[in-house]
Image (cartoon, rainbow, N blue to C red):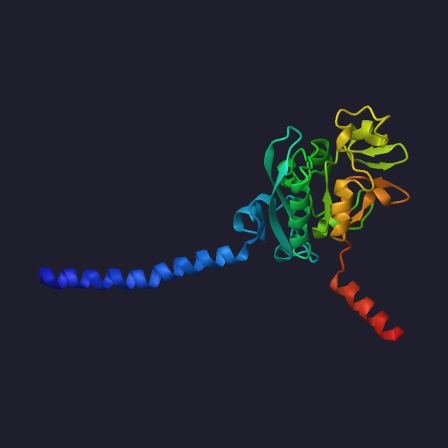
Length: 251
């Protein structure tokens, strides 16, 4: 093969490679961009990526028949820390509430609401007590409700715990996390906790914003109080089918 034919063959090969590969790369990039929903700059959600899957597999997520990875969304938001500085936060929630979640946290951000930290619970070994003790705001964690065999709303990604050490779960003399005991006293004038100004109360900023977007608050429970806990009930396919049948029978 002479020099000119070799050059021509090389040019044809490079052209074919460019035509075949570059559009495919651009298509993948476009698909990835399309899979990420941006509400406002810094407030996004997307499907669980391979990198996030590696972080959560065997920790907050275990293969099960109730929740698929495709049911979940990785959320990134901005928030003000206790030091008044803007920080990046992350959560995993159910796809059903992903859009409302970013809207909630954008509204909190606009109000400069303080959240100490917001990391995936997997950074604490998916240990709920450790995460709460660190006052870490979190959401998804496939687990049962403590002391029961019933799956928590966190298992479905339908619950978010805000500043949990300062807003503990309380039932009688029991307090969780244990280092949140000083915040069992919910009257600001009587509480001796250093960060009592960040306690959640009915009709305060956090309460009003979460309520606006249809969340319920554990601070309004009767037998126990879960002041950190904002949630939506999860309707499983079976539950929806039963409710549909009930409505049909009542017609």
